[in-house]
Picture 1 (cartoon, rainbow, N blue to C red):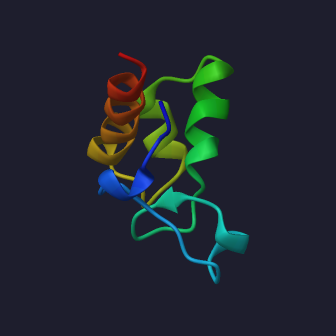
Picture 2 (picture 1 turned 90 degrees about the horizontal axis):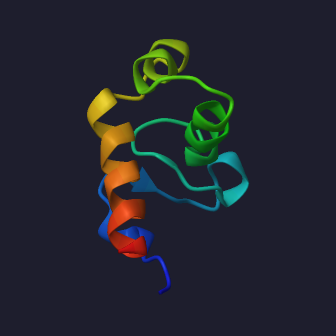
Length: 71
């Protein structure tokens, strides 16, 4: 199944922001930063502490979106 990130309000993409990478809405923080930090053992709470501007709800929305596409 192909991901349609337009269906996830927590994410936005612009060719003029971070070279077109998908970022958390309202930030310049790539969503890949979430996956990299979780892979390295960080918690969601640690991630949002380390990346001001990303709300906990956004991180959870991204993870739920990924889970839905995998189910």
